[in-house]
Image (tube, helix red, strand yellow):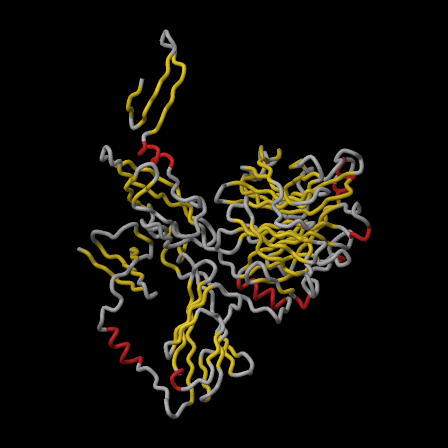
Length: 615
């Protein structure tokens, strides 16, 4: 028996007597497409514009149109128009699919979460440098892979001023949503042996410079309990549990986790335990609770949350066996922090090397949907960096040598703002590092009482020029003699995509360019456009005038040009238009009557705001 039913093809097999033995339900081609089409694998945490087709070509061609519930954030074409700063925005995207067999239009909605703009410019690496130097050190990076030691290669936190054992190892730093930075460390001096560790150091700061500290010494804190017998409290880390309900009814608390080993047989090998920090981050609120074990020694756990798949991913070292593995969970804990999460889907061999590794650290690149897994190749003098877009599959990027002033051991990388970088460099001078500066994009409106900014921000270009074999100078105005050699070498030096144009048909895609034996034909403005790793563009102009009597430089008459432009409709039609009320609040569509503002965006980068009156 077969029949068509609501777009489904239904088959049934029956025994004698009418007893149904099997139902086979097969979706018709249109409905197969309708139910199974995935709009974008990164829809839960969208960084880039979406590719929205006008026809879905799966089982049969299905014409489709798209409609966004809020075009201030997401256009009907899938283009990201705006973002909140530091938080995601949920937008409903409706697909209207046409069933070409019946002619009917069926609607399906998708929830899109647009990733908030991250107001960070640089990366801070917090680490200890050696077994005979267990203090806290800092290093800075513009790209997350290459680092410069701060403070002239000297420590920034002295272990003998904050710890019981006069040694700090395995520092982990978390940026809390409450405006504080939280650091936890292994309180240990390795010269006393690998079983000499008895506690952790908890630290708290507003600026990464001045730290409040306290110690949790397990033999005293848990006197009379098996936790007083620890010989290891290794590699503590902190993650913010947004769901944890506090005693006063508020939500959110730092969860601290670490590996424990005791000498009384109750914890026979290193297992991961957790406990919540108290309100002041000076102590642990409860006895440690078992969190995870692979059945053998499990250390150096690092947990991150990935909004794209909505899982917590926990990376750890297989102590004794080698290598880095991970498990995942849908929640940090159960029963409001009284039970461990259900960790599952174990995956081994995440390291991209056969070398011995430890101290896995995971962080995300700024304003990109790319994660970095780094680890210490401690026998071979380098840190190894790998990347992943799904926290499942990793690829090798580079080995970063640990030498000179930069010799990191087990630490944390934290994205920081340009202002935080400047303050750190003032407190801990780092003369040989030039920080990248990424500004927050311009505001394009207000939503839910919060500022909405453009989708991305270009990296500030620093225009360096040198003449002949002279020194580099930061300038946009150069005057040289005929016959000179002039080199343009703007920063960031580790830039991604460069595009130059200039006088005498000058074109280049190199960052650094040398013009040899220049004359008057080379005078004029050189325009450089830099496209950073997030796809955002920035522009700078360098004016060069060559002293050439035979070809004197004549400045363009900008006044005439400006007048000419003012009388021409040079902008054409805007490619994107937003509407606002007179208070600056974004309007979902253009009003039919009344007074409102219209803001147009043009392909040349210009914007135009007009006041509109409709009766």
